[in-house]
Amino acid sequence: MLRLHGLSFDDERYAELADRCRALIWDTAAQVLGTDVPVVLDWNMWSRERRADAVARARTLGVRPHLHYLRTPLEVAAAQAAQRTDQTSHRITVDDIAHLRELFEEPQADEGFTLHVIDQITDPD
Image (cartoon, rainbow, N blue to C red; front, side, top):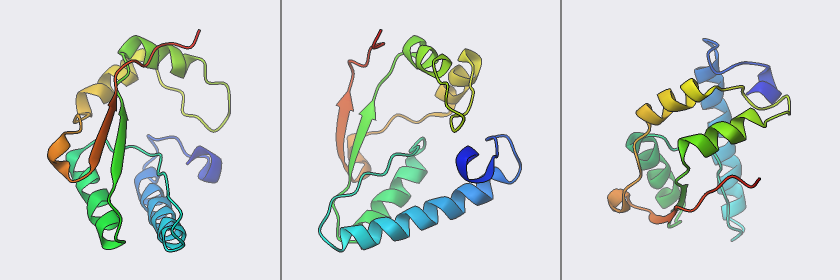
């Protein structure tokens, strides 16, 4: 959203424009999947509700979805966020990450996708 619209996630227009972007991405993914090429969608799946929507969309396209969940310690997430230098990444603090972690619903195997959990995410330094 920063790259396309110059909007921070706390801008009141963010949600509507993000929804439009997701719709465009799904349309593009559907076209690519129609050519038998796999698609990776890299965006937040923070809630069970969002994941259910993604599963339903994938199933409509005849695809068995997979979710790769990178379980990352707070300290590592904060260190990675602090290292961001590009202009298309949101600046977030340790407190922001801690708050977002409270909102996150950890994915479960009964949600309709093949779940791949990766636990050993460490700081690359």
